[in-house]
Image 1 (tube, rainbow, N blue to C red):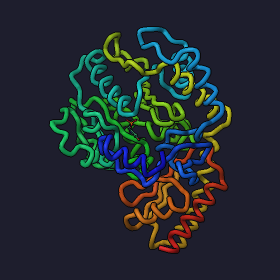
Image 2 (cartoon, rainbow, N blue to C red; image 1 turned 45 degrees about the vertical axis):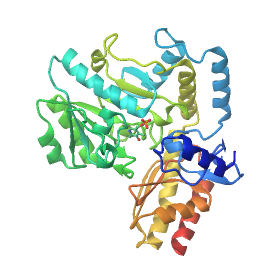
Image 3 (tube, protein in one colour; image 1 turned 180 degrees about the horizontal axis):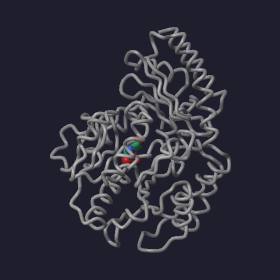
Length: 397
Ligand SMILES: *Cc1c(COP(=O)(O)O)cnc(C)c1O
């Protein structure tokens, strides 16, 4: 099908939930995307931080084929070697002890919410159920996770929403202190809000929050669904500050494009999930687990965390020069490894479209923030080419 046929067919078949980009994609290779008509794009979005090793990575292709021939799925009624191999590798990147595998980010956060509620009752014997999250956050689209999400547009007309969620303003420690009560089970935060516009938690706030949670007997859940798996230049964003959250959720980049989610927790908190308390049919199936294990192997072997950090530093320097040249167009540049936000001084739809026309796929979030989440294999030359395109775009518009 050509792009026009795909667009027409979708208009009459799919629920119209998505405001699509004016682009169909039929093939990917490394950092490149191709339309059915053969147009070529540099992918600076990686399927929203998912295709961490780019497209059609030969080693992942081989792993997928080999595992598909052996076993794709058998259900969690059975022991599966691929799952424990992945669990060992994943846990070795953290201070945490146990993991529950599922299929998406929302399902990981939903699992974390269920885990803390149950842990408080089973492990602590306390009736604490409230989850505190931050304004501007994004935690998913299930009923519980959209309730935890700090953006009204995500919740609109989906009520009644589940009870037991509180949202406090981003970055204000006094509000957070006041919100923690005897009912509080956990605080749920992103180290850097992704959907919210690449907004990092201030270092001091994050450290104080971790201390406050420990002092008040409240669990700290860090949502690393977007920031995890090397994205920010360390395997986990919370490791930049040496934090030790009780629970970490992950999804997007972990299986190189296949659907996965995971909840990781301490030995103690894992008491909240006794046999039969939680489950999923697909979660951690052998195909997904084998691929995710391979993704971790490659990230470690090729030091893609270090690479993401160096690429980010390089880009920061180049973007600083553009910012200096166009101070009336750029309000802020936020670079955290390969999680990048360029905040414009006014709505950025035209700039975004012009960059797409110049062959660069990226995202516009919160109306004014150009968000880049390129594959961790993006090259310096490709980043330079993007910066030149941004410069020409700003000069012309
Ligand atoms: C994408 C995202 C989610 C939701 O993940 P899905 O796989 O879309 O359900 C949750 N939290 C954060 C921080 C995300 O970026």
